[in-house]
View 1: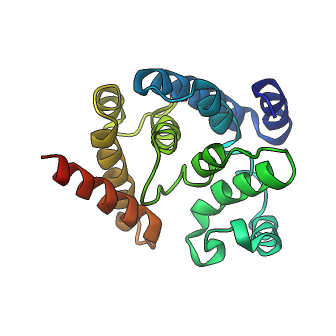
View 2: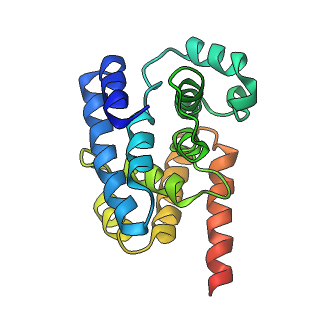
Length: 191
């Protein structure tokens, strides 16, 4: 699947608002990819597909994860807000011909992160959080930080997300906590 095909696919699957978000994420992902020496085409394709399962029902997501447990990454045991990334990666792999593991990983972990994130994973995660239409308190600061230091931006983004989830009384995805601890431990080793 190329970018043009992905763009057409998500246009047919997403609401206007979600499609606009997707295009904004693609622009930011390409910008970050360029900044950090990540393959821009992979970043663009992962960004275009990252929310491709966002507007399907939870029942459809459950069915996909049950049908492809080898790709579900613990799916149903994880909080429902991360399911769409997992399911988007499953659809990309099983129905749309995406075989590149780096792209599939970036799609799957764009909501919660995971330990051992690649630069591409981080680029898509941050692009989703800081895309043009986002206006949550602190997003401007994160946009500046992500252009200076990818890992510092990831720590700030994960902390922001985890704090928000906990403040809502919702369960924290274990992979999100693992991503934070992993990046933090790597930064401590570099000091």
